[in-house]
Length: 432
Image 1 (spheres, rainbow, N blue to C red):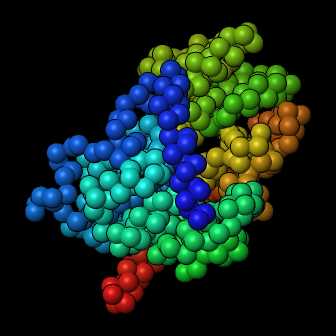
Image 2: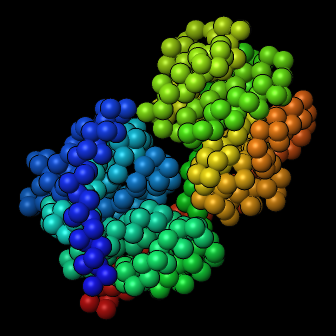
Image 3: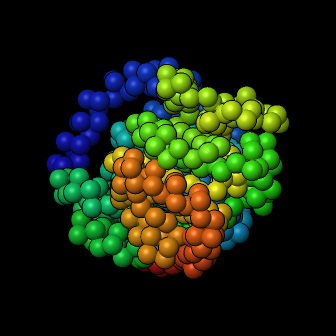
């Protein structure tokens, strides 16, 4: 009965999905592409499952950019462990799909995971026929889980995280959530706290494996590309990076840098979502800020009078980290739960985070404890941190070294996740 009510709600909302896609497509045209996939229709001839030449398939679902990037070391290890298998990467957002293309090219198949109606997920599974599926982090689609169980397709939840806020939300659907979690083949949780919350909601077969994001290593050319950018934007200027900012945070950041009043400071603002590039540009113009766009800079030198560089490019976050002296992790000044601070630490950069880091609770707590990060609450504290750290390079260096040590000591989750997958599938085959 709980899943029936859930399904009826999904069907009631389904007629609104074209309007949602059109609305998002106004700001991000990629939302107007590949609609059929979102309803479970896949017509690519090279992906037909009925050919005797088609290799066995491993399916991995990554909602958007963060999950896709975190999956990179896992995909590499899966391809080593299962060399005869093809990888299918599914997404929910165009930016996730684009990140998959940038990272993996033709080494993986890509498509959208359909909306969670029984017919759509059944068409998805019938078309691709994966040998097993992996869902990154916490994407509980209950009809999808039930369909995998009916198809005898093992489905695992990996790199699972569950904040206290999300746990309360799932707790309101207690019976449905417990049924879904218990239908999963296995769960690889990021931390003991995540595992405890999952157990409280009814999960079983939970193993703590750590966070895959620690195993994402910076590209080999990240430091060199960062220094090349730094030379163009001002090698002798202090550079502050606001990485992956969310709506409303840019105004707070502009207030803080105005209050800090640091001579020759260049602030690089990189919005989390590309559809907001023009919105942030309009904000900078309305504030009278002298700014330039990364997309228009090319190989030219940044004019000295520029106060803000708007990072309106994709796939350059490691370059931005390489070019900066200090970084603020977006999504943490306002209650969005924060974005990933691990990449900045892995690049040896001192990190500032706001008070809202529940999506990265354990990593944030560890980074604060070891001295790799400092927490700021509001405009005044951010301004004070900028003034102090940008004038004290030895303290920045100490934070940078702490960040490098912090990331190195927490690596190894990928191998543990693959061990959970291999052991779980072996137990399944044995019991069958």
